[in-house]
Image (cartoon, rainbow, N blue to C red; front, side):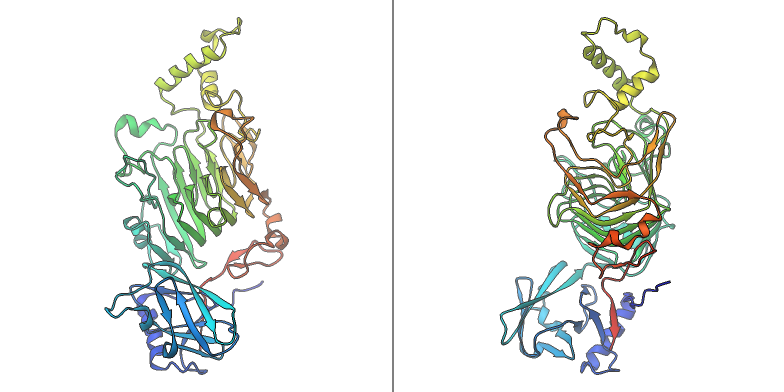
Length: 477
């Protein structure tokens, strides 16, 4: 059995400051100096900036001309040391003459220029607004959903009875406009675990809260249960990465997934364990209203806006009854059904049973005339990976499971794209799902599946399902 051998940085503020105090006092970087050295990638807690930032990196020589971080910081001369393959930066260089820190939170690239070479060496540094240490820290991300965060350890959310999704779905008139998750969330190989988020106590009808005016959340974006997950909506600049999800249970209305209801940004290098579930209570068959292990809807379609390198072992489902559409909606569909059959002399609306009308409402309506999704598969709106991708999903795998309801039974598929020929009402062909598949648990142990997974984020061994490793690892010099 292979063991993780990397030490993982414990980032409580006390330990973090004390370790770097050692570095400041004895910064010659000799063996036994006690200096903390990040391995290739580093992060800085903006609430507790160390005196020196030490990073192991291969440079062509020890004579460094300058280091640029972002657009405002150039570090030169005595503020840089490079000894025995370890770069040490005096963080005083990150402040201006007025004492203001010059680097904003988020991912930043340090560009290193050595004398005598034209090559620019790059290393990644994450500047974080907060180090997440407990469940309340995690929930409080909603106070600043544009910030950057890293996990200090596994986050046990069992202390929060009903976790409110992170970020907010917005409209032009919403009080939370531009409050979708737009920051960076890095798990550093740790897990969010024992989390439950439900929009309603009654999953058999989406009308329960609306008719009783009893909601589990106050915020307008969250209370109706649309787009539900640990994150409600990951916006275009949002990043969720290097995070495991364990024993997470999501109960949404129309669009849901363990990680997110909707993703418009980047989800990468994430692991969802076999104890996770996602369920929806209502499914209008218009492609978008689905549940998936990763997310319900993905519309991110760019190199840095997509879903990639994710493994989901979650089970997804839909409430076992065709309920929750509302009497008014069903009556309206009667009129549409009559219109659709106006040229059929044998059609009699009075002969259509309530159950048949519900099935037509559920599967057909104005979006399609049969039970199949946009890719021609009968799925009941339940998928192992993504409900629908209008954007790009690549190199992701999900564990097999069966969809079972009172009206439907079938194996789950990974996801769907939009095909104009099958669902004309929603526009042209769009979306891609590449190198993604449903696999048995045994098949997921085949290391060859993960040839495109980055080895600095994953532990990959043949005969084992991959696990996440510490991306921001360190050693003590």
